[in-house]
Amino acid sequence: MAWLYLILAGLFEMGWPLGFKLANLCPRYHFLFLALSVVSMGVSGWLLYVAQRTIPMGTAYMIWTGIGGVGTVVLGIVFFHDAVTFWRMFFLSLVFVGIVGLKMVH
Image (cartoon, rainbow, N blue to C red; front, side, top):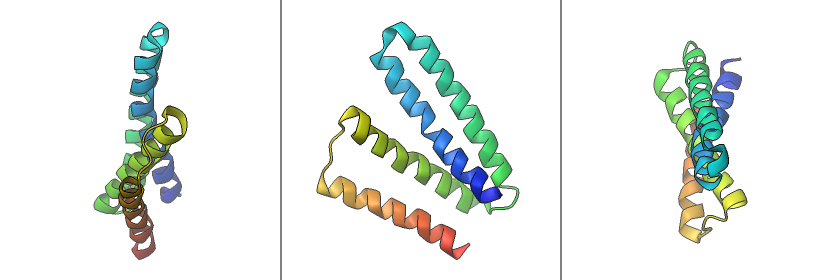
């Protein structure tokens, strides 16, 4: 169950940079998106806390930040037309391999 909490924590970790981006793009809903960012931060942190009851702290933190980072890059590419270059994808894949590797050795 701890791994599910950790994956959810990583997904909520993507919510706060997404909220910041949307707040910047939609001035009319600026405060709504900022509020959603804060809620996402809180939920993400709480789920990480719960996951760390079972998963070692360093492993949990690296996977949490990895999911958040990789997911945020993918969101940027898909929805905001961020650059897709060979080197960007290469290094992103290294982060992904690291996440999978940490899960496999735990």
